[in-house]
Amino acid sequence: MARSSLHIPVPWVFVGAYMVGIGVQLAVPITLGSSIWFEGAQVLGVVMLTVGAVLVIWAQWIFRKVHTTTVPYEAASRLVDWGPYRVTRNPMYLGLFLFFGGISVAFPFVWSILLLVAVVFYVDQVVIPVEEKQLRKAFADSYVQYCSRVRRWV
Image (cartoon, rainbow, N blue to C red; front, side):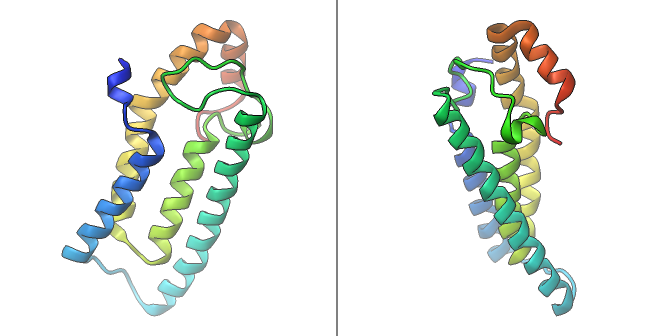
């Protein structure tokens, strides 16, 4: 996969899908359930977006602390396997999904939820394989062992 296929930073892909989802929701609204469901969804959405924000900030902080990159097509200088990376190999992506998914659930923007699922598919099938290939090349057996201990998502 060439650099050109990943020229839009992944966070902006999430933002773009979310915004398009809001636009479609306004043009072709889909509503779900009763006001009781909506109140529960608001609580769930706030929890999701809070957990997502914490994951993204924590993972980003770790990468800055060890002076490595978050850009998919740049070479990593260090394999990070601590903090949230003990539980998931992709806490930033998971955090972005939870954050934007949480906002979408809380309000509820059904179209945004559907588009975010498509973004996760894109990240899982296009972006992460590029990153994994580079990490295998850079860190060889250490990365393979890490992958055997920690799942891609959770």
